[in-house]
Length: 169
Image 1 (cartoon, helix red, strand yellow):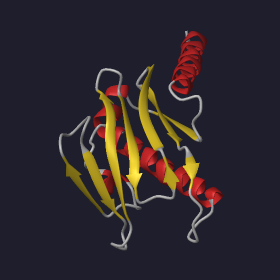
Image 2 (cartoon, helix red, strand yellow; image 1 turned 90 degrees about the horizontal axis):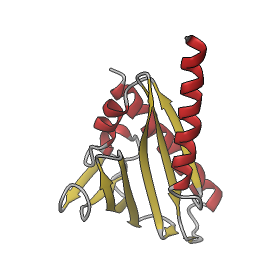
Image 3 (spheres, one colour; image 1 turned 120 degrees about the vertical axis):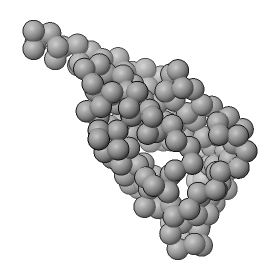
């Protein structure tokens, strides 16, 4: 029975990962995290659009404008109070446990779109899949493209870890 359960979990991970990759095959970055919590519990934590300051050490304050969901925007302020970036919510789907947002101001990349998706793996396990893509990195004196991608990896990994901890409680 345990072998069958492990085979099912492996199949779900492979299927879920392929499904997640299909949502953005051109992503600059794709990160995943398997969590010992149900997809509903993880989505409950992830779907909160106005609490990024609670799950990221890179954001001290978030101000949400407009509807919570498609058409809404959030302005995130860095801990030093100097850096700000604006995100527009492009897609939001409770049924498929996914949302997509564009970062439209405050970063050295044009055309940046990020997506979070929660995949149900069964057996009280789920997986967060985060993708990020951008059209063009804009050269600047503050960071290289490699440093920018490193920042994206670090920031999104931290958020996924914090969401996983909150969902597992």
